[in-house]
Image (cartoon, rainbow, N blue to C red; front, side):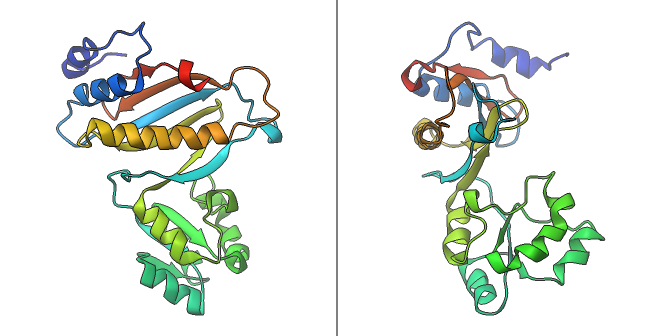
Length: 230
C-alpha cells in the first residue's frame, strides 16, 4: 500500500520496534496527526479473548472525562412522558413506530447513537437488519436500553463511548481529537483502559491485552507498552 508523503514523513518520528509509555505515546500521536482537519485519535486494543465463546465476550460503555470532541446526535425511541424527558435531556430525535418506515424505506440514518426504553424494544427489533450491522442497536450492557433516558442522553452527550470486541477480538474506541492536550488524551485513555481491565472475562486463561496502538485518522500508529496493564 502506497503511503502519502505526509504519512511517510510523520512515520519517521516513531520507532516501530518500541512500545511507548502512555504519556510519550500521546505526545507522539499528536505529533503524527498532520492532516488539514482535526483528526480523531483512536485506541485499538488487541485482546487474548475468543469472542466466539459467549463467556469471553466484552461489551460495555464508559464516559470519557473530556468527551470525544465529536458532536453526537442521539435518537430515542420512547413514548409519552419518557419522550418528553428525552427531548428535555437534549436528544436530537425522539419518536416511536412512525420512525420505522423512515429508517427502513428511506434509509434515514442521521444519528450516531440510538437509545430505547425497554417497552419500545419490540418496535426497535424490527430495525435489527438495518441498525445491527452499523452497531446502532440499543443494548442494555451499553446502557442504551433504559427507563432513565435523561441519564442515558446526558452521558452520551458528555462523552460516553461503547467498547466491544470485533470479529478479530480487537476493541476500537475513539479517545479524542488531535487538538486535545496530551493530558486530556491521557485521561481519556486511562479511563477507557480501566473500564476494559474491569471487563476482563473470568473465563479467559492467559494474556488479556496482547497489544495496544493509538492512531490518528490519517497517520501512523503508536504502540503502547502493555506491561503495566498485564
